[in-house]
Image 1 (cartoon, rainbow, N blue to C red):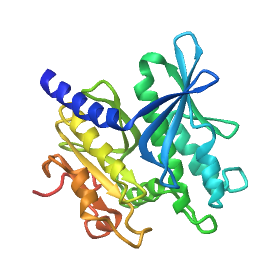
Image 2: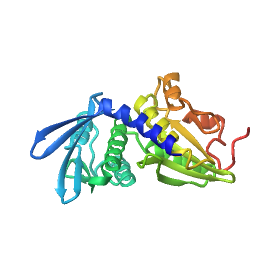
Image 3: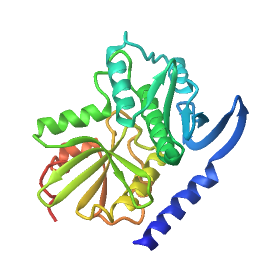
Length: 267
């Protein structure tokens, strides 16, 4: 167990260390450039500062909401559906909107977890750019949730598991089954390689603790004409066997609706 934990930590942190860039930017803030990209395909930057003794505040400085406004997506109560989806994302990841900034405050010891939560929240909010503001009625998570309701599938939303590396792995749905559970991570941008890398890491970091779980990478292939590339699924499932993890597009559910059922998959 110790050897696996060390292997996971080294693999994940080596990848992040090569990509994270820390810079002092004044006013007691440190800028953190991450390997994840925003709606303009620029690297997402976070900004950190001490706010209380032993506590750190992380913020996006309002860049996420500003970038969305540049695409015509307005985050306010006048856009009822988008406002609801936006607030659900913040609730899922424990993030707060302060003026136009997305922020999270945590003890310094929990900085890695806070950083991960804020990054994942930002990426989920960025997905709103793919929703047509005139016709959108639900986020991809809500589409999946509604599908499971129609299929009479029991599930829990927004599950966090403390993994072997000591950080938290987030899954959007947990489905209890007779022989274990299915843990589902949904992806609105089907060919987001970083999302695939995160899934792959989360599975490897969590599988030893959830040996009876099937991990599912579920991508929205209905809203994107280009479909899903083999590279994306290959990245998500790298070095994982099919009894541990599977990858699917939402259209696959329409052909194999037991993928998210409470019954174990055949075979």
